[in-house]
Length: 371
Image (cartoon, rainbow, N blue to C red; front, side, top):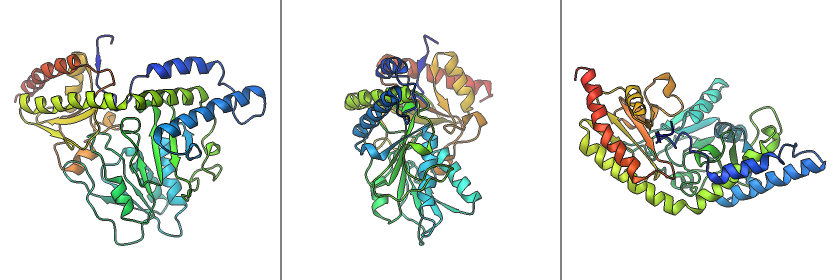
Protein backbone atom coordinates (compact mmCIF):
# COMPACT_ATOMS: atom_id res chain seq x y z
CA UNK A 1 0.00 0.00 0.00
CA UNK A 2 2.91 2.35 0.60
CA UNK A 3 3.72 2.27 -3.10
CA UNK A 4 0.11 2.65 -4.25
CA UNK A 5 -0.92 5.78 -6.13
CA UNK A 6 -4.27 6.88 -4.74
CA UNK A 7 -6.55 8.30 -7.44
CA UNK A 8 -9.89 8.18 -5.59
CA UNK A 9 -10.06 11.49 -3.73
CA UNK A 10 -13.62 12.04 -4.99
CA UNK A 11 -14.63 9.21 -2.67
CA UNK A 12 -12.47 10.47 0.18
CA UNK A 13 -9.49 12.81 0.27
CA UNK A 14 -6.58 11.71 2.50
CA UNK A 15 -6.56 13.50 5.83
CA UNK A 16 -4.99 16.93 5.48
CA UNK A 17 -1.98 17.53 7.77
CA UNK A 18 -3.80 20.51 9.27
CA UNK A 19 -6.72 18.25 10.19
CA UNK A 20 -4.45 15.60 11.66
CA UNK A 21 -2.61 18.08 13.90
CA UNK A 22 -5.82 19.75 15.04
CA UNK A 23 -7.59 16.45 15.69
CA UNK A 24 -4.80 15.14 17.91
CA UNK A 25 -4.71 18.38 19.88
CA UNK A 26 -8.50 18.61 20.22
CA UNK A 27 -9.07 15.01 21.36
CA UNK A 28 -7.73 15.87 24.80
CA UNK A 29 -10.13 18.77 25.40
CA UNK A 30 -13.22 18.26 23.22
CA UNK A 31 -14.82 15.25 24.90
CA UNK A 32 -17.53 17.00 26.95
CA UNK A 33 -21.13 17.60 25.90
CA UNK A 34 -21.16 21.20 24.58
CA UNK A 35 -24.75 21.68 25.84
CA UNK A 36 -23.86 21.35 29.53
CA UNK A 37 -22.90 24.22 31.80
CA UNK A 38 -19.72 23.04 33.53
CA UNK A 39 -16.23 24.14 32.55
CA UNK A 40 -15.38 21.18 30.32
CA UNK A 41 -18.67 21.59 28.46
CA UNK A 42 -18.07 25.30 27.94
CA UNK A 43 -14.66 24.46 26.52
CA UNK A 44 -16.22 22.00 24.08
CA UNK A 45 -18.80 24.61 23.14
CA UNK A 46 -16.11 27.16 22.38
CA UNK A 47 -14.30 24.63 20.19
CA UNK A 48 -17.51 23.78 18.34
CA UNK A 49 -18.38 27.43 17.75
CA UNK A 50 -14.86 28.07 16.53
CA UNK A 51 -15.24 25.24 14.02
CA UNK A 52 -18.59 26.66 12.93
CA UNK A 53 -17.15 30.14 12.41
CA UNK A 54 -14.21 28.86 10.37
CA UNK A 55 -16.38 26.70 8.11
CA UNK A 56 -18.84 29.56 7.64
CA UNK A 57 -16.05 31.93 6.63
CA UNK A 58 -14.58 29.42 4.20
CA UNK A 59 -17.96 28.79 2.55
CA UNK A 60 -19.01 32.47 2.58
CA UNK A 61 -22.09 31.88 4.76
CA UNK A 62 -23.15 33.01 8.24
CA UNK A 63 -22.11 30.96 11.25
CA UNK A 64 -25.75 30.59 12.32
CA UNK A 65 -26.49 29.01 8.92
CA UNK A 66 -24.18 26.05 9.65
CA UNK A 67 -25.41 22.90 11.40
CA UNK A 68 -23.01 19.99 11.94
CA UNK A 69 -24.29 16.56 10.95
CA UNK A 70 -22.90 13.00 11.26
CA UNK A 71 -22.25 12.84 7.50
CA UNK A 72 -22.83 14.53 4.17
CA UNK A 73 -25.58 12.02 3.44
CA UNK A 74 -27.43 12.99 6.61
CA UNK A 75 -27.06 16.65 5.66
CA UNK A 76 -28.56 15.90 2.23
CA UNK A 77 -31.54 14.10 3.75
CA UNK A 78 -32.15 16.88 6.28
CA UNK A 79 -31.85 19.52 3.58
CA UNK A 80 -34.10 17.98 0.95
CA UNK A 81 -36.76 16.59 3.26
CA UNK A 82 -36.68 19.57 5.64
CA UNK A 83 -37.41 22.00 2.81
CA UNK A 84 -40.23 19.73 1.60
CA UNK A 85 -41.69 19.47 5.11
CA UNK A 86 -41.98 23.25 5.23
CA UNK A 87 -43.71 23.42 1.84
CA UNK A 88 -46.61 20.99 2.36
CA UNK A 89 -49.24 23.70 1.79
CA UNK A 90 -47.62 24.78 -1.49
CA UNK A 91 -46.60 21.58 -3.23
CA UNK A 92 -45.37 18.07 -2.44
CA UNK A 93 -43.41 17.84 -5.72
CA UNK A 94 -39.66 17.28 -5.47
CA UNK A 95 -37.82 17.97 -8.72
CA UNK A 96 -34.22 16.77 -9.01
CA UNK A 97 -31.74 16.29 -11.82
CA UNK A 98 -31.31 12.85 -13.35
CA UNK A 99 -27.67 12.78 -12.22
CA UNK A 100 -28.03 13.57 -8.52
CA UNK A 101 -26.06 11.61 -5.95
CA UNK A 102 -27.79 8.49 -4.64
CA UNK A 103 -28.45 10.24 -1.32
CA UNK A 104 -30.80 12.67 -3.10
CA UNK A 105 -32.40 9.83 -5.07
CA UNK A 106 -32.99 7.89 -1.85
CA UNK A 107 -34.50 10.96 -0.18
CA UNK A 108 -36.88 11.18 -3.13
CA UNK A 109 -37.89 7.54 -2.75
CA UNK A 110 -38.48 8.07 0.97
CA UNK A 111 -40.65 11.08 0.08
CA UNK A 112 -42.62 9.04 -2.48
CA UNK A 113 -43.19 6.23 0.01
CA UNK A 114 -44.97 8.78 2.20
CA UNK A 115 -47.25 10.00 -0.57
CA UNK A 116 -45.10 12.71 -2.09
CA UNK A 117 -44.25 13.16 -5.76
CA UNK A 118 -40.90 13.24 -7.56
CA UNK A 119 -39.96 14.40 -11.08
CA UNK A 120 -36.60 14.43 -12.86
CA UNK A 121 -34.85 17.11 -14.90
CA UNK A 122 -32.99 15.51 -17.80
CA UNK A 123 -29.39 16.29 -18.69
CA UNK A 124 -27.35 16.60 -21.88
CA UNK A 125 -24.40 14.43 -22.89
CA UNK A 126 -22.05 16.37 -20.60
CA UNK A 127 -24.26 15.76 -17.57
CA UNK A 128 -25.62 19.31 -17.33
CA UNK A 129 -29.31 19.92 -16.71
CA UNK A 130 -31.55 21.10 -19.49
CA UNK A 131 -33.89 24.06 -18.90
CA UNK A 132 -37.47 23.36 -18.05
CA UNK A 133 -39.51 22.68 -14.91
CA UNK A 134 -42.95 21.06 -14.59
CA UNK A 135 -45.82 23.41 -15.42
CA UNK A 136 -47.19 23.28 -11.88
CA UNK A 137 -46.16 24.45 -8.40
CA UNK A 138 -42.91 22.85 -7.25
CA UNK A 139 -42.12 22.08 -3.63
CA UNK A 140 -38.34 21.83 -3.81
CA UNK A 141 -35.69 21.65 -6.54
CA UNK A 142 -32.56 19.58 -5.85
CA UNK A 143 -29.59 20.36 -8.08
CA UNK A 144 -26.02 19.43 -7.24
CA UNK A 145 -23.33 22.08 -7.54
CA UNK A 146 -21.11 19.67 -9.49
CA UNK A 147 -21.48 16.07 -10.51
CA UNK A 148 -19.70 13.61 -8.27
CA UNK A 149 -18.91 11.16 -11.10
CA UNK A 150 -18.00 13.25 -14.13
CA UNK A 151 -17.23 16.64 -12.57
CA UNK A 152 -19.60 18.76 -14.67
CA UNK A 153 -20.64 22.01 -12.95
CA UNK A 154 -24.36 22.73 -12.83
CA UNK A 155 -26.08 26.10 -13.48
CA UNK A 156 -27.45 26.35 -9.95
CA UNK A 157 -27.84 30.13 -9.91
CA UNK A 158 -29.65 30.16 -13.26
CA UNK A 159 -32.08 27.42 -12.25
CA UNK A 160 -32.73 29.08 -8.88
CA UNK A 161 -33.50 32.38 -10.61
CA UNK A 162 -36.08 30.68 -12.85
CA UNK A 163 -38.40 29.55 -10.05
CA UNK A 164 -39.96 30.59 -6.74
CA UNK A 165 -39.34 27.15 -5.26
CA UNK A 166 -36.42 26.79 -2.82
CA UNK A 167 -33.37 25.09 -4.29
CA UNK A 168 -31.29 22.53 -2.43
CA UNK A 169 -27.75 21.94 -3.67
CA UNK A 170 -25.58 18.96 -2.82
CA UNK A 171 -22.14 20.57 -2.64
CA UNK A 172 -20.34 17.57 -1.13
CA UNK A 173 -18.27 16.98 -4.28
CA UNK A 174 -17.26 20.60 -4.74
CA UNK A 175 -17.00 22.30 -1.33
CA UNK A 176 -13.45 23.47 -0.74
CA UNK A 177 -12.47 22.89 -4.36
CA UNK A 178 -14.59 25.63 -5.94
CA UNK A 179 -16.71 28.40 -4.44
CA UNK A 180 -20.32 27.56 -3.67
CA UNK A 181 -22.77 28.77 -6.34
CA UNK A 182 -25.38 31.43 -5.71
CA UNK A 183 -29.13 31.04 -5.38
CA UNK A 184 -29.57 28.02 -3.11
CA UNK A 185 -31.77 27.90 -0.01
CA UNK A 186 -30.06 24.91 1.61
CA UNK A 187 -26.88 22.97 0.89
CA UNK A 188 -24.94 19.98 2.14
CA UNK A 189 -21.17 19.53 2.50
CA UNK A 190 -18.99 16.66 3.69
CA UNK A 191 -15.62 17.02 5.43
CA UNK A 192 -13.92 13.86 4.21
CA UNK A 193 -14.24 15.13 0.64
CA UNK A 194 -11.89 18.07 1.38
CA UNK A 195 -9.41 16.25 3.64
CA UNK A 196 -11.22 16.45 6.96
CA UNK A 197 -12.14 13.41 9.06
CA UNK A 198 -14.98 11.13 8.02
CA UNK A 199 -18.18 11.41 10.01
CA UNK A 200 -18.51 15.20 9.79
CA UNK A 201 -20.97 16.89 7.47
CA UNK A 202 -22.77 20.20 7.55
CA UNK A 203 -26.22 21.39 6.57
CA UNK A 204 -26.31 24.99 5.41
CA UNK A 205 -29.69 26.75 5.55
CA UNK A 206 -29.95 30.40 4.50
CA UNK A 207 -31.53 32.76 7.00
CA UNK A 208 -35.16 33.35 6.16
CA UNK A 209 -35.57 29.94 4.50
CA UNK A 210 -38.54 27.91 5.70
CA UNK A 211 -37.25 24.58 6.99
CA UNK A 212 -38.78 21.98 9.30
CA UNK A 213 -37.05 18.96 10.76
CA UNK A 214 -38.44 15.92 8.88
CA UNK A 215 -37.17 13.49 11.51
CA UNK A 216 -37.85 13.15 15.25
CA UNK A 217 -36.28 16.06 17.10
CA UNK A 218 -36.26 19.83 17.35
CA UNK A 219 -37.76 21.84 14.48
CA UNK A 220 -35.08 24.50 14.74
CA UNK A 221 -32.20 24.42 12.25
CA UNK A 222 -29.47 23.79 14.77
CA UNK A 223 -27.53 20.99 16.35
CA UNK A 224 -30.51 19.80 18.43
CA UNK A 225 -31.75 17.65 15.56
CA UNK A 226 -28.48 15.90 14.82
CA UNK A 227 -27.25 14.40 18.09
CA UNK A 228 -24.00 14.79 20.02
CA UNK A 229 -21.41 16.36 17.70
CA UNK A 230 -17.89 14.97 17.39
CA UNK A 231 -16.28 18.21 18.56
CA UNK A 232 -12.63 17.29 17.84
CA UNK A 233 -13.54 16.04 14.36
CA UNK A 234 -15.56 19.18 13.61
CA UNK A 235 -12.60 21.34 14.59
CA UNK A 236 -10.27 19.20 12.45
CA UNK A 237 -12.69 19.49 9.52
CA UNK A 238 -12.63 23.26 9.87
CA UNK A 239 -8.82 23.32 9.96
CA UNK A 240 -8.64 21.21 6.81
CA UNK A 241 -11.17 23.37 4.96
CA UNK A 242 -9.34 26.55 5.92
CA UNK A 243 -6.06 25.12 4.61
CA UNK A 244 -7.65 23.78 1.42
CA UNK A 245 -9.39 27.07 0.60
CA UNK A 246 -6.17 29.01 1.19
CA UNK A 247 -4.33 26.90 -1.39
CA UNK A 248 -7.33 26.31 -3.67
CA UNK A 249 -6.29 28.34 -6.71
CA UNK A 250 -2.83 26.80 -6.91
CA UNK A 251 -4.10 23.26 -6.31
CA UNK A 252 -6.93 23.62 -8.82
CA UNK A 253 -4.60 24.89 -11.55
CA UNK A 254 -2.18 22.03 -10.94
CA UNK A 255 -4.90 19.37 -10.92
CA UNK A 256 -6.77 20.78 -13.92
CA UNK A 257 -3.60 20.66 -16.04
CA UNK A 258 -3.03 17.02 -15.09
CA UNK A 259 -6.65 16.10 -15.81
CA UNK A 260 -6.43 17.83 -19.21
CA UNK A 261 -3.42 15.65 -19.98
CA UNK A 262 -5.25 12.51 -18.88
CA UNK A 263 -8.31 13.33 -20.97
CA UNK A 264 -6.19 13.87 -24.06
CA UNK A 265 -3.85 10.89 -23.62
CA UNK A 266 -6.54 8.36 -22.76
CA UNK A 267 -8.47 9.31 -25.89
CA UNK A 268 -5.27 9.11 -27.95
CA UNK A 269 -3.77 5.86 -26.64
CA UNK A 270 -6.75 3.64 -25.80
CA UNK A 271 -8.98 2.47 -28.68
CA UNK A 272 -12.76 2.47 -28.24
CA UNK A 273 -12.78 4.74 -25.20
CA UNK A 274 -15.22 7.55 -24.34
CA UNK A 275 -14.06 10.36 -22.06
CA UNK A 276 -17.16 11.91 -20.50
CA UNK A 277 -18.20 15.09 -18.72
CA UNK A 278 -17.71 18.71 -19.71
CA UNK A 279 -14.08 19.18 -20.79
CA UNK A 280 -13.89 22.74 -19.45
CA UNK A 281 -16.73 23.66 -17.07
CA UNK A 282 -15.93 21.02 -14.47
CA UNK A 283 -14.29 20.23 -11.17
CA UNK A 284 -10.50 20.43 -11.54
CA UNK A 285 -9.49 17.09 -10.06
CA UNK A 286 -11.49 14.29 -11.65
CA UNK A 287 -12.23 12.58 -14.94
CA UNK A 288 -14.35 9.59 -15.94
CA UNK A 289 -13.92 7.48 -19.05
CA UNK A 290 -15.49 4.28 -20.32
CA UNK A 291 -13.68 1.50 -22.20
CA UNK A 292 -15.74 -0.60 -24.58
CA UNK A 293 -15.41 -4.39 -24.21
CA UNK A 294 -13.84 -4.09 -20.73
CA UNK A 295 -15.50 -4.80 -17.39
CA UNK A 296 -15.10 -1.83 -15.06
CA UNK A 297 -14.50 -3.95 -11.98
CA UNK A 298 -11.84 -5.99 -13.80
CA UNK A 299 -10.16 -2.78 -14.88
CA UNK A 300 -10.15 -1.45 -11.30
CA UNK A 301 -8.76 -4.74 -10.03
CA UNK A 302 -5.94 -4.95 -12.55
CA UNK A 303 -4.95 -1.31 -12.07
CA UNK A 304 -5.01 -1.86 -8.32
CA UNK A 305 -2.65 -4.82 -8.75
CA UNK A 306 -0.29 -2.47 -10.55
CA UNK A 307 -0.47 0.12 -7.79
CA UNK A 308 -3.24 2.49 -8.89
CA UNK A 309 -6.32 3.02 -6.70
CA UNK A 310 -9.30 4.21 -8.75
CA UNK A 311 -13.10 3.87 -8.67
CA UNK A 312 -15.65 2.31 -11.00
CA UNK A 313 -19.39 2.38 -11.33
CA UNK A 314 -21.85 4.75 -9.74
CA UNK A 315 -20.34 6.42 -6.69
CA UNK A 316 -21.62 4.79 -3.47
CA UNK A 317 -23.31 1.96 -5.42
CA UNK A 318 -20.41 0.30 -7.26
CA UNK A 319 -20.40 -2.57 -4.76
CA UNK A 320 -23.75 -3.60 -6.25
CA UNK A 321 -22.11 -3.88 -9.70
CA UNK A 322 -24.90 -1.80 -11.21
CA UNK A 323 -24.44 0.53 -14.18
CA UNK A 324 -23.98 4.16 -13.25
CA UNK A 325 -27.31 5.99 -13.27
CA UNK A 326 -25.36 9.17 -14.00
CA UNK A 327 -23.77 7.85 -17.19
CA UNK A 328 -27.05 6.24 -18.24
CA UNK A 329 -28.87 9.58 -17.88
CA UNK A 330 -26.17 11.24 -19.97
CA UNK A 331 -26.66 8.68 -22.72
CA UNK A 332 -22.97 7.73 -22.77
CA UNK A 333 -21.20 4.40 -22.52
CA UNK A 334 -21.79 2.82 -19.10
CA UNK A 335 -19.72 -0.33 -19.60
CA UNK A 336 -16.13 -0.42 -18.39
CA UNK A 337 -16.20 3.01 -16.77
CA UNK A 338 -13.63 4.27 -14.28
CA UNK A 339 -13.34 7.50 -12.34
CA UNK A 340 -9.91 8.92 -11.61
CA UNK A 341 -9.70 11.75 -9.05
CA UNK A 342 -6.46 13.35 -7.94
CA UNK A 343 -5.34 14.20 -4.43
CA UNK A 344 -3.88 17.62 -3.68
CA UNK A 345 -0.32 16.19 -3.80
CA UNK A 346 -0.67 14.11 -6.99
CA UNK A 347 2.37 14.57 -9.22
CA UNK A 348 3.02 14.60 -12.93
CA UNK A 349 5.09 11.44 -12.41
CA UNK A 350 2.08 9.70 -10.85
CA UNK A 351 -0.07 10.60 -13.83
CA UNK A 352 2.63 9.60 -16.34
CA UNK A 353 2.91 6.18 -14.70
CA UNK A 354 -0.85 5.69 -14.91
CA UNK A 355 -1.00 6.75 -18.55
CA UNK A 356 1.86 4.38 -19.38
CA UNK A 357 0.13 1.41 -17.70
CA UNK A 358 -3.47 1.95 -18.87
CA UNK A 359 -3.21 0.96 -22.58
CA UNK A 360 -1.54 -2.37 -21.72
CA UNK A 361 -4.09 -3.13 -19.02
CA UNK A 362 -7.03 -2.46 -21.34
CA UNK A 363 -5.44 -4.46 -24.17
CA UNK A 364 -4.76 -7.46 -21.90
CA UNK A 365 -8.28 -7.48 -20.49
CA UNK A 366 -9.77 -7.35 -23.96
CA UNK A 367 -7.49 -10.19 -25.03
CA UNK A 368 -8.64 -12.28 -22.06
CA UNK A 369 -12.21 -11.70 -23.22
CA UNK A 370 -11.31 -12.94 -26.71
CA UNK A 371 -11.49 -9.52 -28.36
